[in-house]
Image (cartoon, rainbow over all chains, first blue to last red):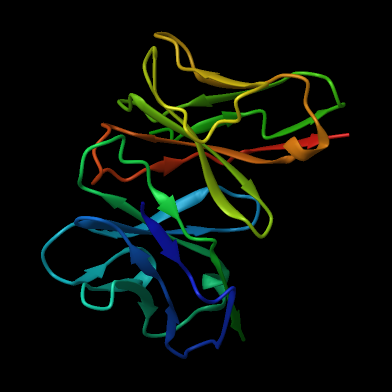
Length: 115
Length: 115
């Protein structure tokens, strides 16, 4: 079975400060990891994904995430937060083994960036 | 370049009525996933379809819920005899293939309210 944990329901950060949204996963086999963002009353938008290769993945809107196999983590980061980054962030994992490759999503972390 | 389209965006039904939710995937995508989102509960997988086939319906309630993705036309999620507990946001996502590395692209969702 695969699972994703986003240990923080909410993250608060001041505009201009760096932000981190945490994600840890548990899978059997090699993971494929994804981050999505959801703005109010909207669908999820893809930010970035880790498939293989460089552990540091760069994505949309200045976000990046670091894959850490030993810590089974895939934390989302941004050097300087914007008020417009305030949204709900979801981490998801899929595995490379057989089956229908259904992703498992975390419960989401609400990011609030204060002016 | 239209993205994933869902309609209606908002749907109000009385208990016992039927709800039909439609999803048109991105052009060139033949794989559709349906999810349900409840407040504070994140995104829950319901069903995965390919044209004319249900690939995985492990997340679908056994009764009252059904889904199809015909050769022509949108995918439809059908909920019969709705109850108040069916009130939620329903999202569909599409991908070009059913690979674990695929990015899923989400529609804006249908918000179902059962009175």
